[in-house]
Picture 1 (cartoon, each protein chain N blue to C red):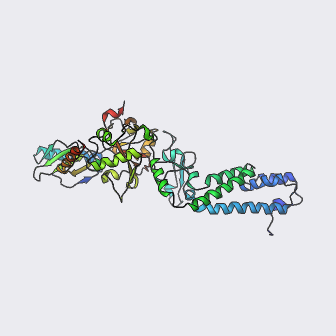
Picture 2: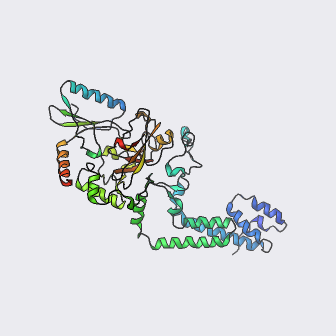
Length: 93
Length: 353
């Protein structure tokens, strides 16, 4: 799987090609699409499609462009975010 | 003082009518104003006293102009005329000799300085400040000149004195009000529906926490938002103090600078999209778009990304939502600078269809 972060795709076409690449990887069984953690908002960016690398067990997310934001492919540390959220919810409750 | 006397003022064989005709044909408004002065008492005056008073008047105006020059940096900016921005380049750049941006052709005037960049300043694209307020005493000076031109010499003298007193006061209090000025300019940003604190939805910290549940990642963030909500203040972030936004988002604001603030009353925001655009996107503006061309230029909508800005989406954002606001960064040769608001999460129920 492509294991280098992408901060901003050059064009919508490039983003589409990257989606096709990741979906091909998923079809080949190298990555697995997982349910995204909706509470995760690293850098105040929510959502995206989440993929788990079978070999490294890392989770990455692909956020679609919303110009002038040009999209994102980055590793997410969902566990850390989840613990933080749970801690906050406990305090609020 | 002996000086060379202007020819048109002293020739003894000139008739009064000839003198008037000569004076009124002068292109300079200052000479015209001086002529007004002289014509009222011309009969009684000798040509020598007239020329002396004329030179004194010119000297005072020249002195005041020189004194104000360092305080008026905008005078060096290219000034648009009647919503038409025209810039002439040196003749060496043959293919770029003249570039005209006429914002009125399709969609109305530019958002920059509310379409009046001659009389307004817009240092960061968020707010319009009058040039009359930018320099102490500038309004009084303009009033003084106008009164002088109209022949109201008493008012002109009074306004001139007022200008001097304002500038003296500014010098005396220099540095004492900078914090207040900064705070005022930030809070007077582009969202026009500024809130009165009495109209807030949440009256205490507990209500705020319940009302904004799930929006903030930590208690500290919620605390900051509550403070912003309660006081109406905002926090400024930039490259040296990046704040909560990811670099990818921060770079969509001009110079990577933005303010974060929490809405303390429901606020209407707008978003422009193409025919198949996403109405729930992250980028909004508080200023109602005037048309596709204006939106494309002000928000620097690079057309390679397909947003033709043909549809306007309106949303009413509830109080308690934290927004990130700043001028749009330039993209693909488009200048940007329009008011841009980043909303991390948009709820479908906020939209007005």
